[in-house]
Image (cartoon, rainbow, N blue to C red; front, side, top):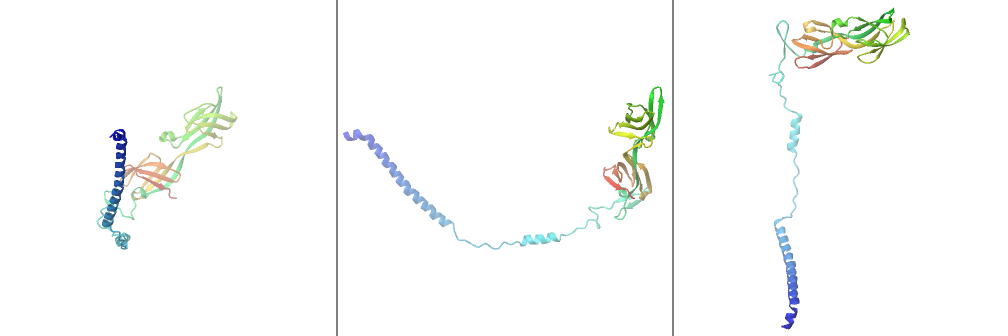
Amino acid sequence: MDFIKKNYEKILLGLVLAGLIGVLVFMFFYITADQQTMSDRSSGYIKRTSKTLDDLSLAAQSNAVIRLQSPYVLDFNTANKLFNPVEWQKEPDGTLLKISSNKVIGPGAVVVTNIDPLYLILTLNSVATNELGVRYVIGVEKQAEKSVSKRRPQSRYVSKGDKNDTFQLVEVKGAPENPDALIVKLNDSGESATILPSQPFKRVDDYAADFRYDPEKKVFHDRRVGDRVAFGGADYVVVEVSSNQLTLADQSNQKKTSLPITP
């Protein structure tokens, strides 16, 4: 008994260690048995026999491609006009005209016959000498002005350094009483322009067009940007005139039509 009393802690520790060793030995055999059981079940449920797959059939896709190469065409134009109704045009006398492919009306029937440049022209008309000094009479012609009254030539009396609504006289070359050239600075662009006694200064500011509309036998002269015209039962505005073409815009839908000049 004395031995047990003196060494009971060691005896308990030994028993615990023996139990742990027993558990580990048991777990080893248990895990091995469990793995074997799972292997047996997997081999029983999963059949590992291989089978050759059948050839892939593309018959459905091939038939669809063949159908797309020869689609069924539905005619909604010549028969019932479902999506392409016939367009009719009301003539000035009130009659209705059926528009066909060989009948051109509207802005496409406009024929541009002429396009003229509109110039800014500065001309040295005369030189006036008095007790106040030398003054120059310069003719100013603005052909592109919207107002007709402003298109006519007008005179400007200037001395060196003077500025008006169109230009400023910045330099006089040669004798002031008989100048070889006048150098002016244009107000709108800031560019320099040279006016010779024998040759005026000219700059293209815009263009004006002459055109006709044959279906109604209408003729339009000197039409500029912003001018309004009417033909074919519609109203149009001139939105652009260049050196070689005229552009009209339909007032109802703002559709633009560019028309080259006909030589």
